[in-house]
Image (cartoon, rainbow, N blue to C red; front, top):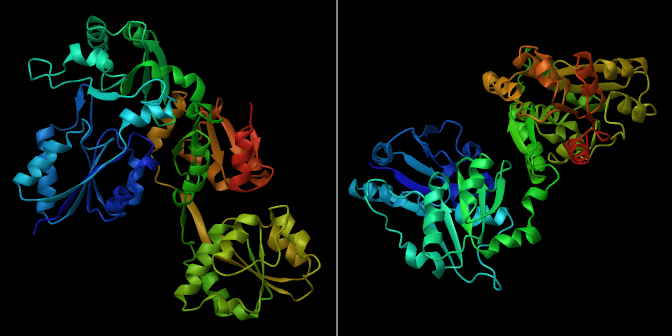
Length: 503
């Protein structure tokens, strides 16, 4: 029985511009067949075991012929699978979605079209250039800058197009720019007409080149501007000086390496991208079960009602503790006797997800802070449980024992080196493509150095940002200078410090 195909527009570049329906299609996909211009981060919406097939095409380099792509989509559907054909921009705006739909129809495959945000509108918008404006332009046209070379003649009516429409937007036209501008001038468009090229529109790597129709081809060579780029012609280009917004963001153009565990990186990435950064997620660590296979945690859970205090030192500890509690067929009611302390506001917020309001949260988010706020509550014989990482500082349990407490440390999780593309990270660093690296724990420092074979020189020209003093100290012990250290030891505190850094 045939499956189902969704021809989905992935949007113009920024993966967050995919439509809600496009996201829903990805969530149920068995197969994703992906274009060059579709951001791979969209795969995060798909099931973990999804089959991913790259068929990207860029100038002079086609992974697969269009005819073969169309047949591949049909063949995968014939296997009874839900297929998402993920196409940059909109499937029907020079996306060859119509050709793929025709092949599906010929093969008797059910399909749906899910429109996407086209770069013809989005790239100018992110450059602060509206394609229409009541005072400047009441019409616009979208034209291919790269016609089918097998046709033999152009189907563009240059004589009528050149002056009939206020704003002209050419897609895929960088390589053909001398011909495009030559035809426009030949048929009446002034060489002084404002023009712009927007490369990688809507992405943090966005480049905007302001020029004129007469100088565009020359300026592209002068500034070494490469595809993919959108070419915009018309007086609306002048509005950029007034409504430019995207490239005014405080971190615009900064390439930041995120070393946090994959399942936690998204929040940090999202906040930095909101400020204009281009984030490269390269998790240095992954969260895994402890090496003792939960022996110490299970022992603690077996006597959970004996504890006077339970102290959580990380959001990971909270999540793993309650997951294990649930596996033992227990819930939050098992903690009714104990009081709860959290090392900081993020950990306290995570506890609220489980219906717990922490009794104590220090203002200094580290072990010494907890010891300070608990000094009046701990008496000889007080029983304390600390569910924490397998490898952690001993300052907290040792300090509590000095106060007279009986302390159980339960290994709740461990951090291990992540399966990150080592060669890619080293290549980016070697070529100066990373401006900053963020460290959110000591283990992210240690494991990133392992990933780069302890070649600390690769980080010499990279700004280092640490979430707090413990992580900063680990950096220094490993021979790394710290440029940014958060005053408040949370993701928000780190982002705020990065935002205001002027080094």
